[in-house]
Image 1: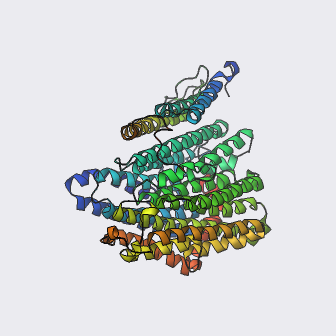
Image 2: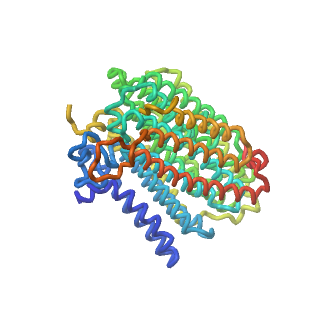
Image 3: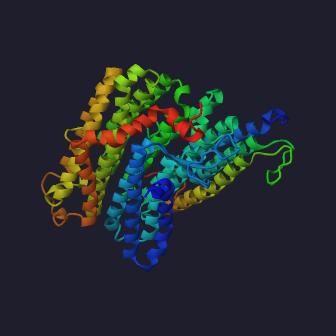
Length: 522
Length: 118
């Protein structure tokens, strides 16, 4: 068991990748065998992620050096800096790993029946697993260039997945937009990596952080990295691609795309907290993140109100929710250098934001799956065409309401648990931020009430009379997310202690991350 | 870092290419030209990385017994190679999407082929 945990970080990536390329081979022989293989492999990966996360949170940061004699031999004899690719899993990485494992497993189970009639399923699952592998790599790697490579794997497979249904013109357009935005963002990231490498001859995040001098070139690299990651996570004013891509992807893919966005948010945090950390001018950088967050909240919710396309509306709601995370994390970054303020509300704000990340993945994923279920049955996403679906799709409408209330931050669902943490702590930093946040939450409720009343209530139309509940695997996938929403809402303390607090600690303590690579020599 | 190149010319060239790439991406409406813009952007980054590692009169670092002379940096070359491979995959995927868009809408003008607004 201990050997398994020692090698688990690379196994998680390798098993996912290997399954991705085995899928089409097995798929030729038998569909059932292929589906079993994918579910078993992802369940095994989820088990590894949980075991690894438990180990990281109980003991210490987990380091894996690829190709070294021993996994923890980060700096080979005779060298003074790390020369190999190193995977480094701390609390935040493990937290993100859990989110990715849950959502990809749910997305696969949902797709099994949602895509039953489509052609090219072998390719679909290969791309889905590649995307999961790319995201695992992004959050587990301790190497900047490796981060770039995994980001590209995620983006390319994500774009192909968005454009999977080639019969629709709009999904092709969505895929095109996603890959253009991703390609530009990742090339700019590579440019910034080049700038950093030119000064320090290092690519390892921990080693770079240890030698960071915060010169002019470093500042330029920081600006490029931050704007590229904000572009990838869809923060306003770089959100224009998000609604076009999320709304046209096959039903289970937006749930994965949300997690991909959060992996970019993770990279943004890694850059600002770990790579630059103490050298950074924290209050300026923090305020920039806060302002981007406020804009995302406001623009996201106001654009969501006027949408008539259900998935597009949820996509704008995603922009709005990522604003909450950015505000919480921005406040944490702004007070990072001030221990008193950090203890009083900074840690709490970051706890709220990190907790909101997993909550966001759950409820927004559920909303997209419900929208996908509606599309599966009636073949349209236009709210004006829908009426009275609640008469026949009872369970779906209840699940939608659950996701909508969680998103609006209504107790006792999980959105409330994380939003209250953000409200309370941000209020001590600047009361106006909390007031805007609560206003935005109320508007979010209005947005979803509009959807609920126009889609699920009202007279049952003759043409929708024989619409039935969606097949069982789809319902099961939605219920797993719904159970998560209720559980996280009822027992937030448990989740906070076990997975959120270690993630926040990992963000605050830059030194631990560096020491794991460079050795704890003074 | 680079001692005798006149005016750090390759860096200037890389930045000019970067500017051209971004200009095309922002101001051109033809989808194929957007793909070309991304390719130019990629080339500018490649040129930048290669220039970082280049040393005048440097040797390729493929010795077992290291002679004491000047060598070029191998790491950035590895990065460039990876980026070229990724660039090919990206271009291929975008071009296939452009073909699909053309089949559906009959135009390559991004304003006319656009289906989603707001």
